[in-house]
Image (cartoon, rainbow, N blue to C red):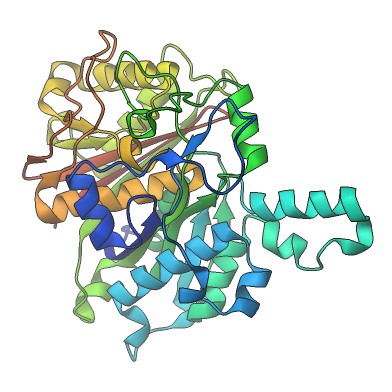
Length: 413
């Protein structure tokens, strides 16, 4: 049986640089950072006091107060991004739309961290009877996918992938396979996270993963720069509508790009540190290229995982160098996290949307704050200024705690 083709027909996001795709894309092109001092809680005793929070956010603009009470912030972000993507795609308005062939696969590395912390405080201070009956369905990381399905009558395949910061790429790749093999016509996919919370920030900070450039937040996330000192925790969601090509064509859908390659591996090395040799990451990219049936010289653009931590950026550069050889110098690489911060389980989905927009518009956003190049990071990271380029193939990398590697490839159609 020949595999079906899969295309992107809708995109939606909410994050620190924008409440929708249009605003996000313009701010990324303009090199505007969404990082600032954390406002969600008092950071006086925290080593890292900065984050990439969604600004000027009022959930009542999207949901009722009754709904908000029962839904964690990470799932609210997922619902908002999905609403934009589904409206953009317009598939629910098609009279031939079959809800049993429409599904939702999300990614979330942590899930309802805010609900978890709130209810633990209640338990300790006031006892078990004060814990909310909504706690479990607010916290669990599959519930974002469930809410999206309930709101949009998606009765097909539905679950969540949880693989830390690679979650969304695994969700997108799994959705890709499901459509390729005929399990669905349409899958709403991506990722979401809302972990700018006291416990999450303290945990990341105490493992020395976060930047402590507290006095200059917008300069704190500086992927591939010699002065980088850690990532900045972000929040938000990215959602894409993936659709079988003929199904999309028959209803006259707008197509952003075709998804043509996916692969995943694991370092099997360490729970947090990437393997220094990068071998599993190399195999992930090579297998994705093989899946897409293209060569190394077909790739125009790589959206790097690019966290702004010393080990990640160095290892990811090594991986790209080993896969692409001398041709690596011809590829534009960038890091969206230089502006959005690291949205954990939502990061790769936002970055997948960026790949689609670069293919659509012929523009590649800059990696900001790249002022002092690290000799170990010697690729073309599109420093500080956007560029114009005809992007025929875009590759997006994601890596996660646990050694997870996931690579996806989009093609101009």
